Length: 541
Image: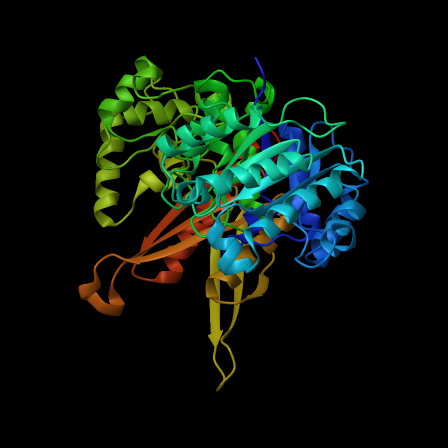
């Protein structure tokens, strides 16, 4: 069975998404991770368009990629300039990437109204650009047919001519692009099948070996990026383009973290190894971390909530047979089954979570009814444990007399000062104890009161647990007023989501004082992290 080749464009198309930018160092790190995942093509950027991408390819030359072929992106040569004199094409050749991908116009609307050249001139630009690169001894030359499906719908004959021009120029692969993301799966399936049949009738230039491979590049503007990519594969496409986490312009690109397990697990098509498949969740987290984007909990396959269960009936069922409410084993993609608890929970939820925390029922350590009653009481006060696993674990351990605090608060003081037109100035003074021994007073500044408190606590803990908390940082900080009718005296709920290199966890605090609520959530976050490390014997108090 012919393998499906994975073409990642996170470093190029992914960076066109809002709020996403990567340094050269970031791009190198991501490229290495993609190579370790088993991706076949890594599109590194457009070396002729900006200095950063040029520097990336210069640095990437020294990298030892085991699986992936580094790919440089660019456009057909400019109108009125010979291909051999085009700066962008020559930048691709100079960057040292073994594969080049050139995009050109397939939709006559773009040719006549955007490029403003004749239809024949566009065909010549496609063929001449590909021929120039192909004759320059690159390992592979790919052609991305931009706006292919829109062009095919409006002017089928011309769209076919652009594909024929690419084949005549020596294209080894043709990527059919749903650039506007407006096509539907049944349309994609029909058109891809027609193009595959059409390309088989075209002669390849002398010296070109093997058949032209057809690929698919979809966007998510109708929420169908993944579905459209899968439809193309069903019709015979063998190269699938996408980005990690679906990052990209507008609504994003097809998400490889969904496409890969669908191809591998659901369709039985070879694309990466079983071992590499288990790295998928970590790949998703790594890219979101590098992009400084909050991970989407509901992301299929790799999201924190992808295999999470809340309803008591569901939890009771999965404890007997996981398949009852899970479509696959989460371990296959490096994820895990989770149970969340709330006032909707039953005893099964509590039992499952206790086992997960390593607390047994058979010794009478936990009274399930008591825990359920406590959850309902606290949630009435404003706590929400289905989104705060870290705080829930600490609560259960306390009720089971199995909580061993990694530190205790003696006192803290937070000061905020505002001078005329200057920004607010905050600093915190904190005193903590570890195993009953009071630590020295610690002082730190911050951009706000919570930031100052965070910095002061980290600084104090670093004296006891040097360097342990360096990888831990805030992913999200949310404040919600619970009863607005009380005005500024209303209770508030603070939810903090934290992460390190391998995991995410959430903690919660509730109080009439926003600083107090923030402290509760912040302290729980560090207690959770340090307690986990102590259980793993990574640290000792």
